[in-house]
Image (cartoon, rainbow, N blue to C red):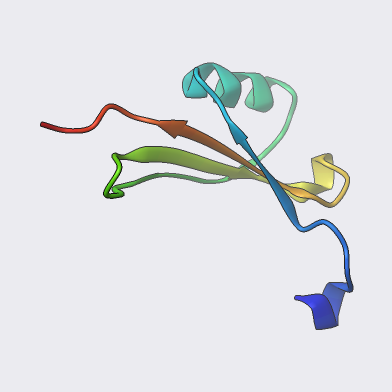
Length: 71
């Protein structure tokens, strides 16, 4: 990545409480969701989305919401 793009900020991660509302807001602004997945992690599942960097000044934005741990 550095060889191709050079040094600089690659991406920012934002922890959100209302993931669905954020995804709706981004879509209404015309932002394309590149990936929208759930990861099962030892500390509990997480929903994660990445959005296109064309709308964010070339910086990849990641949105994360922790979900309740399964019992």
